[in-house]
Image 1 (cartoon, rainbow, N blue to C red):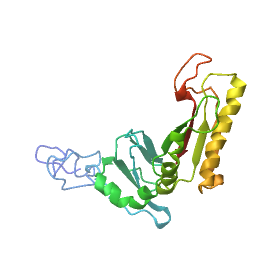
Image 2: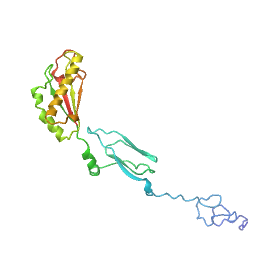
Image 3: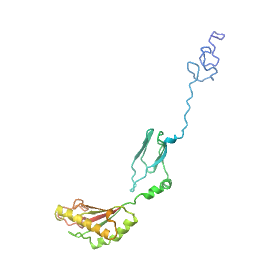
Image 4: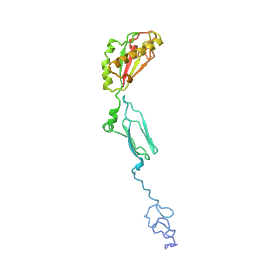
Length: 236
C-alpha cells in the first residue's frame, strides 16, 4: 500500500478511504460524506409526474355543492392510490387517472362552477312546490276558496315541467279512525280528478291518504279543526 512521508496510507481526496483500499470514487470533493468504498451516497432523482398511460386516462373533476336549503354535506373521492374528503361549499378535487391519488382540494369560484356545469345544473329538477286545499267537515269537496287554487296549481305543474304530482289527503279527529281514513282517500281522489279534468296526465299523479294520522294542528279526539281537513298537492 502506498504511504505518505508519515507512513500513512495515501488518501488524495481526503475522504478517509485510502487510495489503495481501493477508493472506488477518487477525487470526491472535500466535505462530502462517503460510504466504505469512498463513494458519496447515490442521488435520488425525484420522478416528475408523467402522463397517464392511454388505457388509464380518465380525468375527472368533483365539486361539492350545497343543497337547495344551502346545507353542505360531505363526499369522499377515492381510488386505489388515495382519497380526498370534500366538506365545504364548492370544494373540488381532480382525478387524473386511476393510479394517481385525487389532487389536493381547493375552493372553486361560483362563476367557474356555473360555467363548467351549466348544462348539468340546468337539467336539475326545480324545487318542489306545494299547495294546500281545505274542506268542510265531513266533506270530500274542496271549499270554494280552495278550488280557486286550481289554475295556479296547473300553471305551476306546467312551468316546473313537473313529472310527479303527489296528492295527499288528511282529516281532523272527528269520527272514527276508519271513517277518516276513507274520507281522506275520497278527498285526495276528488282533487286528483279535478286536476285530471283540467288536463293533468293521470299517470303522473300519486295519491296518498292518512286520515287523522298526520295532524297539521295537534288536537284531542273529536275536535273539528279546519286546518286538519286538507289535501296537500306537491308538484315536483
